[in-house]
Image 1 (tube, rainbow, N blue to C red):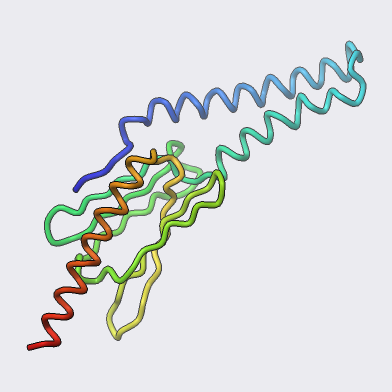
Image 2 (image 1 turned 120 degrees about the horizontal axis):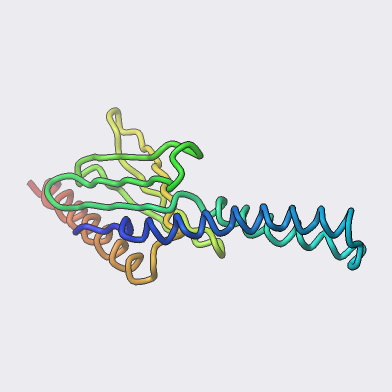
Length: 163
């Protein structure tokens, strides 16, 4: 199964530009209000606080683009940001049989996917992905696909133990 929200990159780019413009306009409005007009008084700080909160919450949600591919014998995860210099993209590919478990953490506006993968020497590695920008349907499809892979892994492990 393939899952990608790459087609929404234009919308996320628009949101990024909008929040940056809102922040710059908020600073300009604050400076004009504070030093030129002085109508609102201390309420003029709202011109700074609201755009700053919107911009920070947009960036704290994490990387916007998430791609998942479970076709074939490997699982492929890619997670990247629209603005490439903010943080580096995450790209992982590993065989399906190494997937042990996954967990989706939903903390209000922030959603994270934690994948536990077995490694050499019987250690576990936890991989982290930002999935805040996935729709509910995309999230359900992702969970269904990962559950299916884990179920197959358990069945294969059970069959190997019988032999």
